[in-house]
Length: 263
Image (tube, rainbow, N blue to C red):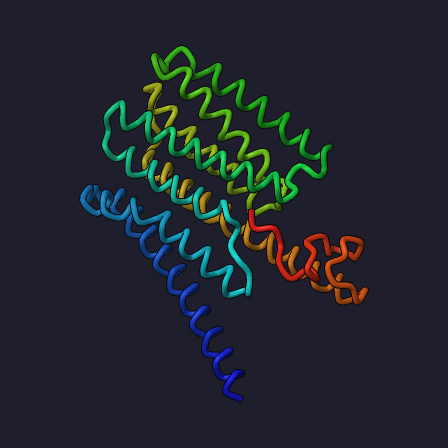
């Protein structure tokens, strides 16, 4: 009875932690977007650096709530994005390039994580998605190129990594796929600012709204994909009675399907 009570208390604490962090992320996101609309620059600068660390902490807590470990590269991707957020707030050229580098490293984490989780398993689908994004990338860079000046090469290189995230994210499901597409849209809006194109009404709001939603969908979609594979692995192992067999339905993790890959 004592053991069961302790287990229940631990589960309750994990549930409260994950829910509280998600609420904190949502509230901070709303405060940041509201600050953009109202022009409250102090609140914008205060809330932006907190967004991705909160989401990273929530992702870890949500995975633990499900009795799993969060993918090892998910938190680094989000924290590197946080570093990029902070650097971009400094509004000078060296900081901008450093921020772009931090986001580029985040995309390397995302692409590596998605590929190792089977994003390219369906080769035909992956090629179709890659072809669509490659067409969009060539068109977009071609249009922006004359107006980017010294930022041509950095923007082109970074946008290639960004497109790679969009392509590979689509292989894990609609949530991650939509997240990758929104991330691309958000940074495209930034690129049009760099090129000094005419801005949309509420341009900065849409940059951040699509960015925050993109990151949430990438994180949430990855955890849902992991949870789905975990449950399929456990069910497959249970149906065959094997432990650590790679031949059972979905049981490709070994150890009875008890723990998925955490890359």
